[in-house]
Image 1 (cartoon, one colour):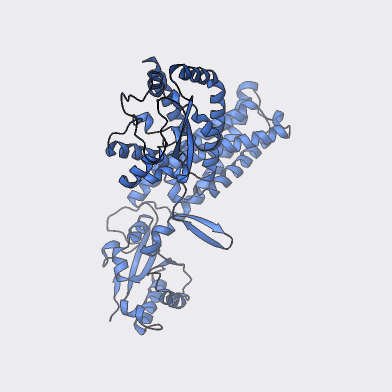
Image 2 (cartoon, helix red, strand yellow):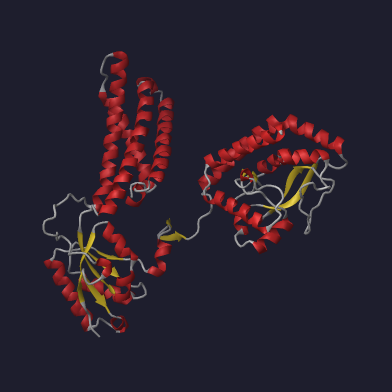
Length: 494
């Protein structure tokens, strides 16, 4: 049993010169500390917001009134706006490095938060009757110029940080590695640390036998003593442990020995649990949980979607009432039977409900065995064929939306009998129940509506439904509703 002290060139994963060294003849280049990025972005945001508040206030009065106003109020507005803006971004984690690199997230959050802060502050100003003390033109200019500048700044920042990661522009931070040989050789986290400037100076291995020994083995004690000496000689800034979390006794012993060093010690996540710790964390009292699987829509998103559903469905019922009345009258004149047809369907979380439709067939099938409607189906009435072609037969489902059983947009609900059949043939079919079913959906506007002759066609419909669930946003719903309306008008004209 032996321990082996390695230089950084001994391990392929850390195969670069010792931190701080430079090849002869190479020119030095500026390297920024990794930990400097987040406070630097925070400070830059403050400068941008405060400066733009002053510039728009002064510029507006200078251009239109030829005088320079008192700058105090506009500086105060800038600081107040930034305080609220940055507080929300900080709470959402938008100043974290991994999120600063993600420009799409930054553009979305900056737009929403900046707009929300302005609306709230304008509302407060209106209630306190202080809006007359400030120029509306300067306020609008501050909002528009501020939003444009912040998004442009975030775009440039994301591009810069991405290039910095690729080129190794972060300042080197000298570290020691202590861990199991197998984990040292295979850990993907080490490669990630190197991208952020962490440069291993020495690597110390712990053998399997040392983990099994009760107490602190003499060989491990000697290894740690060597690590302490090198940490002092090389001015090591951090020590990183790469040890399986099941070896808690060994980890505690190492911490006790290394406590003589005034440097931070970090433990990399165990490969077996790292994928769970990379999830969203929730703090519940004195404990916390890792969200292993989130709901397709957050509570805020569910409330937003429900609000839009109720508002639009209510307006739709009022505006379409004449059309629905005429349709009901024509159904009565066209064939015998009720105006509305109800059928058992499965909705959110697999719960069953009765869907409302205008009757388009001569039969009212419902139960464990239902024959799917086909092209030129003799059961479809003359009027029913046109109602199905234009989707007018689906309009009564606005009542299902009001009742909370359906949404305007979502996966189409299938008859219970068909659900049972396809759930056995398509493995991911049940995931459609993760959101409320809709009157129209992403699959329908892509041509997957009506009859499904093969399992492959249903599989494609399910794939489109799942894409919608995983990529939901308000604008996607609006896009689907507009495309549905356009397709309906084209079908009616045809």
